[in-house]
Image (cartoon, rainbow over all chains, first blue to last red; front, side, top):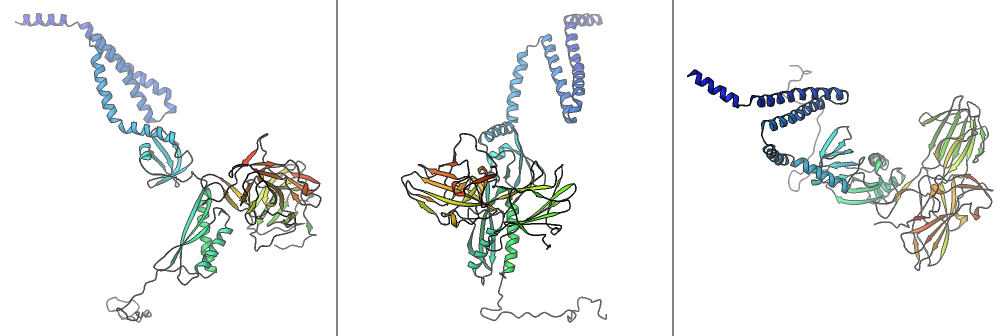
Length: 295
Length: 272
């Protein structure tokens, strides 16, 4: 019985073509070892020029490439046809396609952005709530530097889909200031004063002409809109400088910027309330102990 | 800030002034007050451009040499000396941006007609030292006011706004040592009258001449409007204008027009 088992095993073993399987296994092991060696060798070459992240990626890539080559050779040797593998590769490609939908969309959006040129490197743009200077326009995204020196990456897809404001496209910009003056003041006098300020300001351009418009009668004040044009680089200094000058001039001419006014009535037609301030110390509060008083 | 002037004189363009180490030369020209100090190893330049207080138009150029310096608030520019002998000259320069000129009221030139406008533009003063006339810096002689000239707010260019209107009579143009006069000839070759509200003088392309009376002139400019309201060709003469009389050239133009190119500038009307 044992002998029959032994002889049938030996027969099967003989039919197994050991050499072939040995070579397959040998190829796989060789592939793995060589892959490791190649990976480490390549990383040593580029060590100084790449980050750790890249080094790990390169090593893995080399290993897998070399291993894959040896694995394919081993499979060929073992007699498997590669069509099966290729078929699997086809399915893999479809899976990859679904996975890379966003990236492909970003790449195509990037191409459209490059053709359309809504902004260039160096322009200041505003996307949703983020504003910054464009430092790079890449394949998948646009990189901004915010005024407080943060690095922002915006995918191209977002730029195609949403509103983008380019603040640097046109050479001049209009500064709009709103101010409210008391109802008692002479509006035309204030208008003349503001236009005089615009004439004196160095940043303010003579043309397009500055103007002052009454934009509404507010609850406490007459609202004016004071607009003037400045070169785009001087927008913030021009606006700030003008606001300082307006404040000074209003003080000089004694023109009041009113606080909100509200009248309080006791009843429908009664006199306003009388409010009288009590001097401190005359209060007779039994609830709060006063350190200075006798206990 | 007051000092006893060691003799206040009228300043002169391109005149070699010799300073000794430690001396400060003061200039009051246009709306600008300039202090130039010579020390053993450096030149120091301080200047202050005053806002015009009223419609007063400063007439003369005062120059004195003394030892007093202005207050500390005025920023100072320092230049290392390299082998100059303490000699300094001042040269006029036209603005680096084109200047927009407006006649005092818009005027109409009849079809086929022409008119000559005289315009005055504010100059910059270049401080040049030594025999090589090394330029240290340049100083504006009035606060330059800027404006925008273009078909709309999207296309166009930033220009200086002229502080004076264009005048038809030469006598009406105020002659000042800190302004240069340019005669502009307008030729209307169209069949309709031409309304002129403003036009663009290519200031960087004009050189500065001085005539025998010490007045500063630039070469004349001829503008021909042929068919379209929006494009007119502009030619700059090569020499001082006839109205100036015999003149010498004090300063070359800042930029040169490429040979053979005729400038085309727009007659731009104000956008809405």
